[in-house]
Length: 208
Image 1 (cartoon, rainbow, N blue to C red):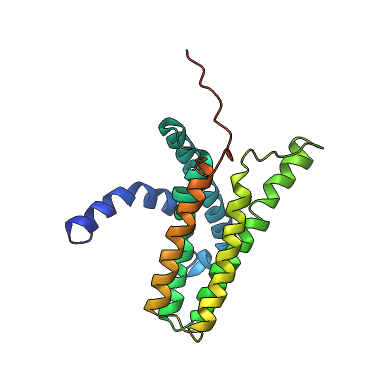
Image 2 (cartoon, rainbow, N blue to C red; image 1 turned 30 degrees about the horizontal axis):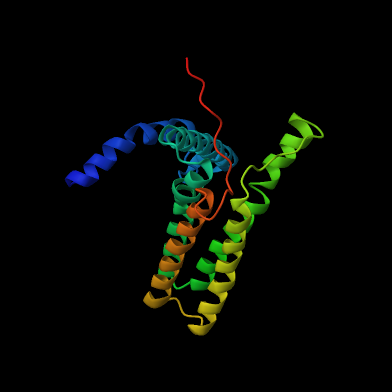
């Protein structure tokens, strides 16, 4: 157990997860037969990531429904932040190692993967295997404006990196943080119908 109140509290909270990971995920870093079990380590890790992601999405949707917050707003804020923390940590680690170009490539590549694979694959499975010939209906017109805003941020990122002489420093980081707050605020305003009836009202509750 580590020293310090905060570290001990975090260690105790993470202990059930650590025990579950230790039992279900072979540690292929250990010598001997464990090194040959790396395919099982990969499969087990992906299975855990899938299960925890599903649980996180379900909890976020339940909390948003209870608080009367649209699913799109919860996805733009809590869910997006939760799924992007690993990318953020990876970018920090590679930046400390002097690989700033890898950090930028990772941030852009992860978004490309999320949009094309993480959206395209479930839609393909739903419309081809589960319900052949069906369509996935998106019930928010605000996503169109949010997508345009997101594309604008990508263009803006290339521009500010170029004018900053391809250097990642405090000024560039602060600028990106401010732009993120502005984009998130605009996206939430789109989805809460501040600029017009873009997002339809949720389904009425059924009283028991």
